[in-house]
Length: 148
Length: 219
Image 1 (tube, one colour):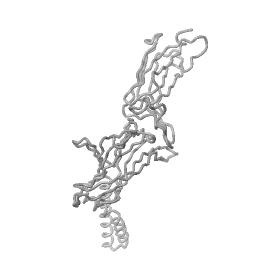
Image 2: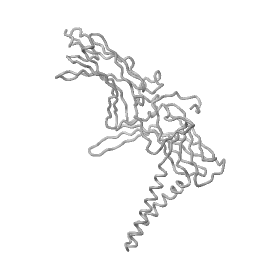
Image 3: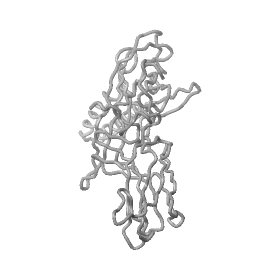
Image 4: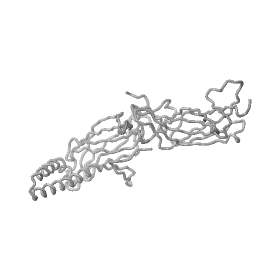
């Protein structure tokens, strides 16, 4: 198989971070073994860079708010055949992941290959931003033990 | 990301306590007084010019005065309502000591007179959406907690209380544009020689979490 047929897998160290903290992880190049695509990976397909972004978006009754809170680009030429770490800081003033009555706040890490003359490929991983001091207690979006 | 303080001003004196000031009462009083003056001027002017429609303007001025004059009197006799908060922004799951304070400017207070007030902590989700050419905002109160506290008069009328911020409902304050979470504390005096009008304070809840304490006074 040619190297451009390889795939990129995004590995996030912890799917949970606090405001002011960071999501860290690794980009790993995964050779295609035979014809089977690797689950959760995106094909390189001749792309020269891969972009890792931390997004926050809303779901619910209101119009969607969507913002990119941080972004890093990795040159695939320098990426070689190994793996490259990345870090995406979380803004100190939030918002945190939230599952309310009218509003849900969702955080995601999105990896996108930038391919010439072809559709970009994307892989998305949902992550949690929990209140400061909440690591170890929160396993799902705020609020705790919702009462309604 | 955090919401603004539309009705309150904030200042931090040397004690470290944060003081939130409700400006709404003064704005209603002054705005109402200006409206009464305008209606009266137009009404008298119309009557002088021989038009009976001036009576309608004077009637409107009188109706407005019934609503505004008590507030104007309070505004002249009392400083703006204040909420003294031990730590601000607040944290999820915390119990924060606070005091509702009215300081007289045009009246003398007898020491030791009992006071009471109802406190109402509200967390509201606000979701804005476009439907055709209309923009609509839907709201939901996800926290609506009321309690009563008592205090006494001294140099000022002071009602101490504890604000219980839940971690089982509501969210830290945020404003993403179309989707927003706001917290307010509304105080309505029930007894004592202070104005009965409600005061609303915009408070900020930070994205920080503190386990619920075993005693209410942990702030």
